[in-house]
Image (cartoon, rainbow over all chains, first blue to last red; front, side, top):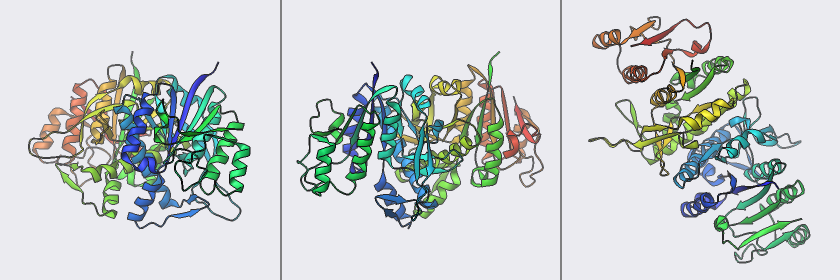
Length: 259
Length: 259
């Protein structure tokens, strides 16, 4: 039987809110399964851009990343947020190591080419170097990934953190029994976006189609869920979506996805 | 006989000047000895602080680091500069991994306590976790350190990059034959600070005292050289100070220190 590996992605308000983050990291450290953490951090990057007078351009939920934007996200994601999380995990006894895709050549990406839109330095993942990351896991370290990748020719690239988590999960599914967890500010996928208590406990592809058609699931949740269902098809064992308490072993309020 | 390990610190203009940095990183990658890179990056941090309207306070050549300053140096050192260097090294075929002291709990420091001055979040190194870093070296990776450390209780700290390099060199001297190289914008220690061609080829403690008394060596060079002579006493095999061409195997223009 394959060994269990948890890959957990945190994003949204969860990162900006200190007490939610602390609560999450505490439970995360207590979980003794092999694990990888992936974090976003969009709001802090937008705040820094504003302070520097740089205008953030978003398109289809993706940040258009020019050279200046790339510097900002590299500073915020790979620097500030990554190291703050790692230092806090160390405090809780989790031997974390912060990584971006360039480190150990762990995640190779390719600059996105789009027929009409120039996304700038946005990268689509081409390869995850499983064996390099696995060396860390096998020696008791917990990799903590920012969503900065590289193209192998010296260029850093900005990649969507949900996609980083999904691609890591897919790549590790060959050797591990992978559980992929998405933690964010809601307690799961909601059947009514206005009602935080409308968490859908089980979501399969048919129900997803139904709720999309009805307009109950929309906007940012669509690429996230598309990613998830693709990851299930590609061999990821289990995917759950929930709130900061999800790493608590007695958590019961989240959405479990299935094909 | 012990295996050779090169620990190289780069700083000053060398980091700010793209062509000098590329030249250095190229030669650095071609050197197939086991190696660790340590980088500073003070000017970029000062520039970002200025853009954000944060005043930088320096005292005895050290940056006073309040919470806002710490965020800036973490973003610039651990994020932007570290990841740019790692991505460029990957391009040259060097399998680099960027680290700060919190990563793998590699460098533990203690907030500096001074009888009269509050340096803020400045850290003095207490312990280097040699075995964690050595795992990377033994598996073909090249650690690239920013000068951000942590206290093990969740607090990041700003540490002088020269000191990080010296402490790594001292700690690794038990198991390796360590050569410590300081690369900066000059070609070595100068007997006349106004004359770039006045590089002193050999500098021992007596000559150092003499030149200090005569005022030829002053300011920032003094803590740097004090660090170096201490490292020699503590078992580091060889220390050289020179310019960006120092990693070139035919480099001849640098200062070699001895006790």
